[in-house]
Image (cartoon, rainbow, N blue to C red; front, side, top):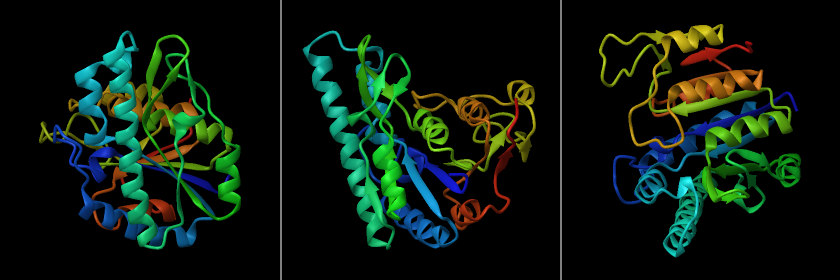
Length: 261
């Protein structure tokens, strides 16, 4: 489905990620939903994937369940983290539906099998939902792992899997920065925006990773995931007004990543 687009909205956009407790950013969710509603008028197929933000990263970092399950407390934390992700997804899809987006919640961990990384996940339902004109909304979540009981199925991992299985044409990464920089722009005022990525060697030479509480990997990992898909993509600032609309319409915004080796 070459006209299919997959849009990832980072957890730092829809939650107050610097909070230790789960905190949705309802104002920002409203803005994101409004732009998605306007942007999908030019899209024939769209899948949304959102991050966990304050609903996931703090508890995972605190409990270490991403390393596996070894005792009763780990099982409780595994279950609680799943519940929190479901809660965030429910809140976000409620906002999307309220804006007129036919957002359909999809719990990826219900069919995902992990072995340190994602081995397989059922996509038949997702494909069917797309055929019916719905917008499946998936999210990063702890999932069953054959080897250690639990590992983290991140949104950054879900995106490339869906892109390959459903033959997507474009992936769009909505973050809280304007694109790929030579270093963290929040810490280095001399950081330079890379408007176009043409080779993986360039990425490795020039891009640094994020330094926040993101346990699923930094910006470099996001670039590598897109490059590994073998399709084009963009990384852009989803918190800037109008950027989601531009990205969905295929307009220039953020960093463009070519299909490179």
